[in-house]
Length: 242
Image (cartoon, rainbow, N blue to C red):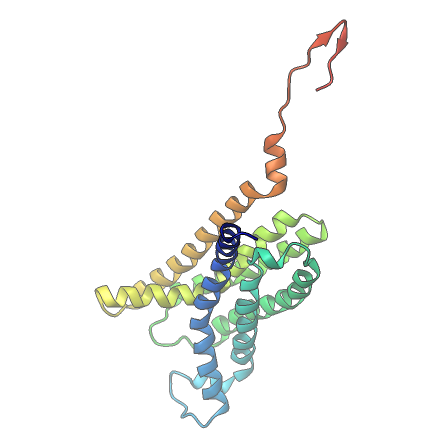
């Protein structure tokens, strides 16, 4: 292998892993926050009005933290192209973990939204947004399952990408709200709902861009685009075969 070839290979390898690494970094925001919450629940933390709902009913929040951690970190690896060709068995095994983890993460999040007391700073608008996007995540995973049963891999990947984008909303929300606070100061109830909803929309926008780019660059799309339908002509009374 020449030096030029090796450099090109390293460049392609880094490019393939850029997205998974970025997703893992973004995932670390909710993962670290969840780990701190688990430490609080399993330690001797003081019960306050802000955390009383978690101590009163810990199972949903513990389930949510564990499943979101697994889903966000393991899910990021599904976007690494080098783990897909020739390693479909790994992709399937990871999927068998990700599907129940994603469903439990979304359903536990919906349960907390509906039955936990709203914390200070949240309001009805944010509650509605959480119910909408949580339900959309569940629906996306289920539609992805239906697609893979039909062996419709492109549709399966599209729905799973959307579900993952919704799941990473907490990471984007932390960045968006922090940026707003640095520029404009603390948020009120309305602005908090707007910024959190905008974060989910941003993630889904990136997901849709990724889905469409993947469709344009997939081998199947390339083959379809390369087909040229030529008009039928005749030679000596017989149609020519293109």
